[in-house]
Image 1 (cartoon, one colour):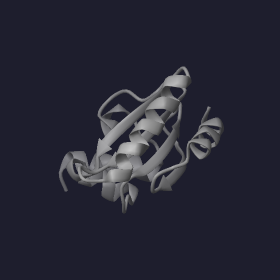
Image 2: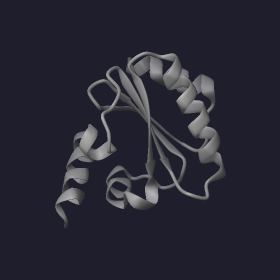
Image 3: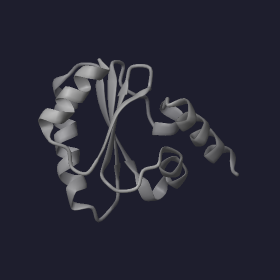
Length: 115
């Protein structure tokens, strides 16, 4: 198994994700991580919802990950469809997870549990 796949598996096993897995620095208070694919219509709407919410709350980042280009991480986290959204707390722990296009109110509630 290549080194980056081992790292992704280890991060998933620990339930924590950081810059190495996410491709950029996570939010100071929380992160809204979206797994997307190129031809996913609900992914576009999810992107707008998550970006809007992240823009409303200081220290929260929206991070979109191309599922097709990050298969090791997708496998390690058991992502089966797009969009899949993970809510991470400030330490990078996964506190909520949902598949499919989320409702704005549900994301805000999940974010409240993370910060």
